[in-house]
Image (cartoon, rainbow, N blue to C red):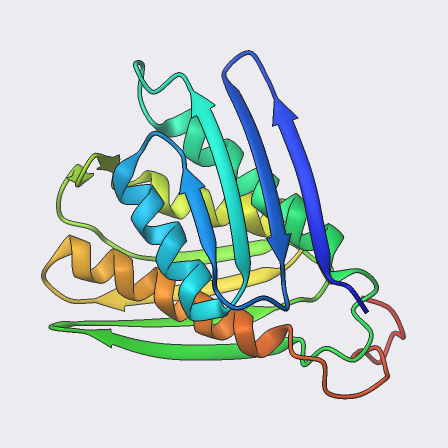
Length: 192
């Protein structure tokens, strides 16, 4: 079973191409024009063992909103394509990840329903060259197009550490949730 996706999205604001392999080795080649966002996506790829190739160009001369939002949308579409019929997946998983003084908890459910509840509370307007409040919107966009539930929270002092812990916890939860463990659809409904 091959769980890969190759998707593209072009709008008047962004032009994005994503290749994803859910059963990869954590290899990545990521270029979004937003350096801190690249760093977070690289951490996600490495810790989830999902291979990612992302090329994105957008109107970052205005701000990073459209680029990060559209990467979230397209990354969710790639995930939805790659996960397929979801037969045999673990489906639900969570991870708790420390990073120095910060601690992040993320839980996901590949349920076929979209919902995102992230309590991140960053202190600063920016984390590196990325707008801090776009992080929640990235996860909302991903959850909506991937059709899954994401719950996350983080505590700590340093916004860089908090954000990185969230992306790593998301990666670890995703790695566990997509594991194929059996040959059934993990739902009493019979579909996800």
